[in-house]
Image (tube, rainbow over all chains, first blue to last red; front, side):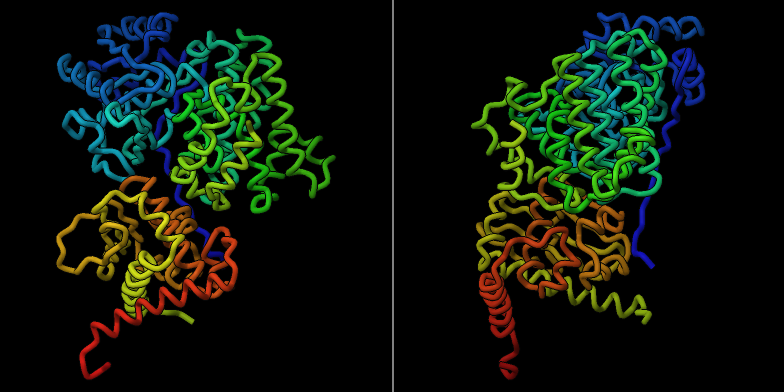
Length: 394
Length: 176
């Protein structure tokens, strides 16, 4: 018998679809939350995305929640300490994250501090450090990419040391994720594309990395199919609410998949490119995905070939000889990347980002081999191999 | 053949002890493993343990080498890889399964900084690559490193030689 084994855990209640936002008062009441701290960023607030949340609460007789809107794009330990201070001062009893990955991760970190105690979130960094359930956390994503609403991880910048701190624990899984198309309708095209490719990468790496399992595979392929079917139509018709919802569902499914099977080389490289050159995460994923798949081809030819079915549809899959499916999958991802570039200007190479210099590549390669994501990659990667791959992607 | 938990426990305890000695020896004799050591802050305590199992393997970074800790040393692990059961440790320590795959299959949990874990796992992988026959190492590792057999033999001889020398130094006088 095979020695294979897997675990799968996702206790997050997903509330998705038409008027999903209006379910929030009920969900708060169910978990006994009366005064949540609404955590967001100024961009989300100025875009008017907090207003429908407040209206949904007030229309159900709940008071307007206190708001913390000072979350930057790369949130830090200092921001978390400040938000936790506001939470305590205002006597809050739960958290409501309205925003993208940075807002959601900040909310998780605040939840750690207000539940475990203390002011220094660094004390809880690492894997499996948290010891108990946290205060209720409700997440309303305004992008369709990170999947952080259903994952057990958060990443913060250590404001003093300038390095990224990872946190991994089952207690970081939020309680409720609310997916309402109204929250992503006004997401600009380049962000729609970049975040969708982040989700695509989550799903693909979940499907090909060492921890893949039958349940995460099901979520991953469902996510890939949705992105392949809906991303370009949504870019052509940004007001397509159903398409927007499908992309949100895809990001959530990809999040569930990778939270249970982890990611690999694309993320290891992407984290390092982001740390050194400040390239947005979704852009890194879009650029690096085909190159990392080619690297992993010797170990994962069959799995990469299977992705042609959700990516290209049954006709393409059936008409492609089995031995060519893996290369065709990568070619289709390259074609998608080119179309996204044509529609939104999303960079196709590290050079096109205009943020990465060639002389930074050795440092990026060195950082990448210490990234925890690499542990789950099907093949080991040394510094020379990482550098070669980065040179190709430049 | 079914191997009972008792036998597995004895085997795992023995291998953890041997692994500690090999890592300590390799940290002074193998250039590739030594190249990983600057990545560990001074005093870092690395642990490999089994839930409810035998005494854990514990190593401390001291200067430019790794040093095994005595059982009664009160040091707290900075990085700990914990097998959930002795039978999971047995799979890895009989080289039927690699460390990364054991982690992927949730037989192993990680407490601490993932970057430290990556370096520690690379040390374990390197040791397996040089100390095990190729056909065994192939099962335990994701990728076999490019390692000429001359280098493999030379490094393995230095590592095992160092362990043997240490054993002789601490052996009772009559046994030498």
